[in-house]
Image (cartoon, rainbow, N blue to C red):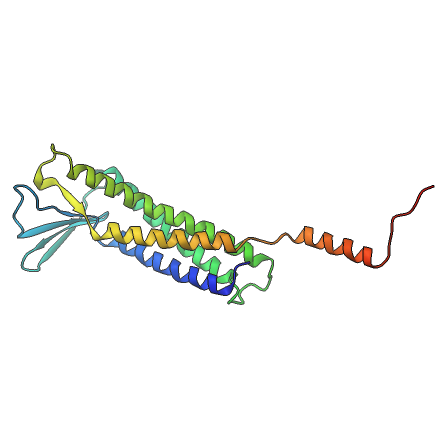
Length: 213
């Protein structure tokens, strides 16, 4: 079973990953305006997220509008909505299981069940990390592809927003935390150790097998 120090580190990494996932899901900074070619007007910039799009003026004013329909979104942003929400719910549940099964808590008194709970929490954290890194990387790939496409007008080109980098950082923290838990929370084989102990005790007591003539 993993030590308390490793579990505390995993809890801290998971909380940071959860914060990064929430920021990535809420903040409309997945795609931002690109000022290239003939698109040199910097009076306003457009920020696109998975829930709304915002237009920022050079005066500091900002206007945001939610998407009228989910069908107008690209495939990567549609998938990002579902995957980030599901990943956040799985991660929140994994944190509860991890806190209950950790060595530094007394929520569960059964010491044999604690490593199993930590292992389950580690697997769930890994799943949530993949659910965050997949839509972020997918959106980044599409943004870079459209930016390098000469057929796309300069006014329609976008660059990577801050949420892409926050999502990458949060997913790396989650994958690291889940990997540590899976490595240090392996349940010990109780049956084999008990059998070996019984065999040794019988041998020490002088019980031997009968001899048949």
